[in-house]
Image 1 (cartoon, helix red, strand yellow):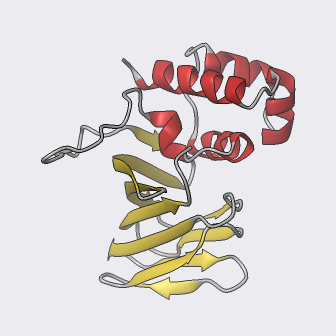
Image 2: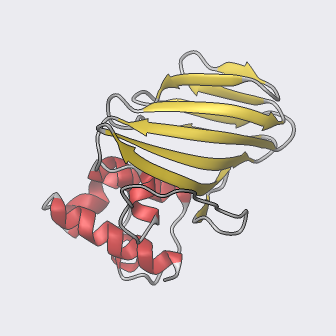
Length: 187
């Protein structure tokens, strides 16, 4: 199934689970009701920023909106080729969901991350106890809590509280990194 259809079905299901109206969900996410309606119908391509806002309002991890299949209990090996994972692009950041796992009361999502050169994105706080971990592969990345970001280069790693506003900035060149997000419980 194509990504827009998967996202639409998952948005509709998550909104129904929380018993939120289309209007209320759109208002809380800061998007138009018509936009949300088109997203849920699978007739509009979502941006990363829009899906992050909706995931926050619905209290679900971003990965829950991107994947159609139920999560398996256990698999011997998972291979996701560069062109295989669900990809989502925003004005500043591109992500590709590589894997997601639920175990021990935690959900973990692994993304390939690209931050465009000369750009900055401030991500609104996720729900409490969400942890973000980044390993930079190339470029210089300014990231972490918006109030105290760190500057990282290739091979550098950071772990921070995703429950506060945080920043992704590539001051000069494109940045390639691995992003691991840990959520406190399956959602």
